[in-house]
Structures are given as structure tokens and as C-alpha cells.
Image (cartoon, rainbow, N blue to C red; front, side, top):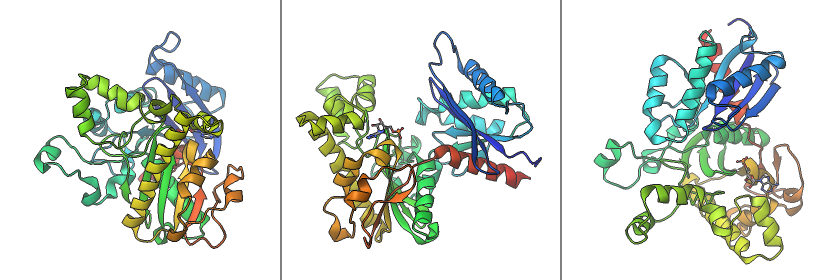
Length: 384
Ligand code: AMP
């Protein structure tokens, strides 16, 4: 190592690139930004987008050519069963990520383009892939397998991989810290409720179950995604409704969830309408909360003992009524929310349960970029 301590975190999506530059010496954010509408007139492709990122970084004093830059950490959505930890990117790793594209056709191609472009600009700089699936690699087979014919499942890599892993990992560790305990000594249920949403059961720092599966469609009700449903719904829509595979894909991923139920995918809007007595918004809210409570109860049983239920991401960090409704009436499980604490606004990790609640309820703002930077820096530091 050269004493370089800065890590550039890149999250390349299909039409946008988000970045943050973090100095791992003190955790300082030195720059962040978003290049949108890739494919449009001004930003024709990912190369142009990364040129813009490089320009913005240079204007802030740490260009891509800066000797202070230790590595680039890339968020990669799908690591399959092969990638269970942050991985230094080589030609061979990149090829393996390409082979995973059928499992994440919307996400991995954009991640790959981001990696390829950065490697072209700085071939000498270590680049690390941090996978959204990796934290869930510890799921026992009983939680990871679907109950379908094993040979068919294996042939098509059909199993539960889980997503939002970087967030679940960061938040579960930060929650243990908030409780003043080591991650190894606590069991937590993490509820990552953003536009996408997932729950995770984490036992002593190890993830033992999560609500997303083969793809980020399974589990909780989300902004525009259905979450769990009877798989025969798809067959019915196809056979009786005549919908094509692409139409069903579009329905379940983009026209379902809160948006499908009441026309709004944003929880702020749903709760505003709810306050005005809108019955459609109320039903959407109730379905969202009902599903969430089923997962809390289910993961309580999976873990046996729960030290904390932790809310994070846009909805989890901000939606007071969602936390209140999700935790209501669970005193018999040792879960006692404190209404005043729950309503107080803050950007800090905090407890929102009553003093003496056997199970703590916490709000911990997620920070996937910091976690990616941390894992990236730790890996390149170990390389020496
Ligand atoms: P994320 O994916 O974590 O960025 O979360 C985005 C979602 O968080 C948005 O779609 C909103 O529904 C939700 N959100 C953000 N701020 C609030 C708020 N103050 N109250 C309720 N929901 C919010």
C-alpha cells in the first residue's frame, strides 16, 4: 500500500451512475453525485457517464488519476452462489459476473459496463466487486431452497439468493453497536423498507433468512413490486388472461405493490391520502403492513430469541405510521414501541422502543456506500 486511503464507490445502474468518494482514514465524504439519463442525448453511454464522474471528481481535487485513490468499490447486484465475499476484480471474475447476467438481466449488465469502463480509465487501480447477495450466502439450505424438483432447480440455478445484503450487514452491525453489544451476541430482524423492500433474520451477525429470493421480487410489498404471491397467479394470468411472459414481468415488477394497489408508489403520498380518509390508500397501507408483520412474526420464530427489530431505508427511517402499525399489539412478544420516541425526527441511529422493552425497536439509517468502501478498503489493505 502507498498510503492511499480514498475509495471511490460506484453504483452503475442501467440509466444512471451514482458515486461517492470516501476517505477511509477518517470516513469523510469528499464528493458524491449522480449522472442520470444515460442513453439520452447528452450522456450517450456509460463511458460518457464515467467521463462526467471523473470530471466532477477532478473538480473536487481527487480525479481518477489521483495517487490518493486506493481503489474503486463497485456495487454488483448478483453474485450467484460463487461470490460470497467482496472480490478483487480480474478478467476471470468479470467473466464469472457476465455468466450471472441471466439471473439479473436488468442489473448485472450495467454493473459490468461500469467496471469495464473504470478499468479502461485506470487499469492499474484495484477494483473490488461488493455483491448485494453476498451477506445472504450463509442462509441454511432449508431457507435457501424452494420446494421444487431438485434436479430442475439445480439445472437452472433456482434458489433464494436474497438482496440488499450490504444494507442488512451494515444495519445489523450498527444496531448491535447501538445496543452496546457485539454483533456476535445479538439476534436482530432488519426491515429494509425503501422503494425495494426486504427483511432479514440475522443471528449473531450471520444472516439466516431473508425475504427476497431468486430475484428482488419475492417477499414484502414494495413501491411497484408485488412481493409474495401464489405462483399459480402467473399461470392463471397467462392461461386465462392471455398475458405474455413480458407483460406479467412488467405487471409484477412495475405495476404492482403500492403503485398497483392505490396508484402511488411513494409512502409519503400513501400516508397523506390515508390521513384524508382515502379508502384505496388505506387498503394499500394495510396490505403493506400486514405482509410486514407476517415476516416479523416468521423471523421471530426462525431466530427464537430477538434482541432488536431494526427499521431502515426511505420508508423504515421516515414513515412513523408504518413503524407504529407494524409494531402495534406485539407486547406479548416483548415488543413495546414508545410513541413519542417513534415520532421524534432524527437522522441518527436511535431506539424507538420503551425503556424496558424486552425487544428493542431501532431506527438505523442505512449507508451502503460506506459499507462498500469499508469492505473494498479492507480487501485492498490485506493485499498489502
Ligand atoms: P429508498 O429506496 O431507501 O431511497 O427509499 C425511497 C422511498 O422511501 C420512497 O419511495 C418513499 O416512499 C419513501 N420515503 C422517503 N421519505 C419518506 C418519508 N418522509 N415518509 C414516508 N416515506 C418516505
